Image (cartoon, one colour):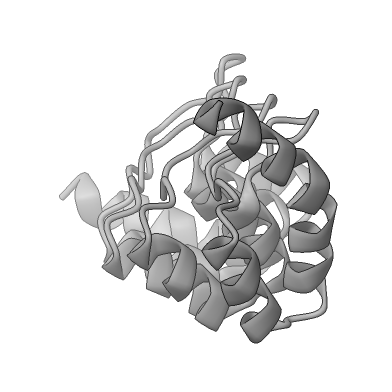
Length: 173
């Protein structure tokens, strides 16, 4: 009986939770949590509340979700974690917050792309610098053998490519 009630609540309020996160309505998110919504329940794309909060850059909501047990390294159907999402978006504040709260810096998507690799693809130099500073593996490779450096070059992100090449040279000394 209790399980069925929880499922009804989750189904009824799931969309409301996503919209509350989308609009940054912290109080509404808190209310929905008090009603019993499971913040680790995923939608049809495997995304959970923390994915949505990360996408929207809602640090207070991310903090709330983590404080009640949201999985910081949860992956969606593509293997994208919250850290991957924040790195792809170049949201350095969220990347930093997730790392400070224990996100796995080397977690990989389904095609073995890391946060460093995706940030390099999109040319997010400050995010790349932060990830390197936090010891991201500069030599990590995607499933087809690309590194952050090779993809930065391929996508024309010269500043990122120069920085990564300098870092790689420092490692080989």
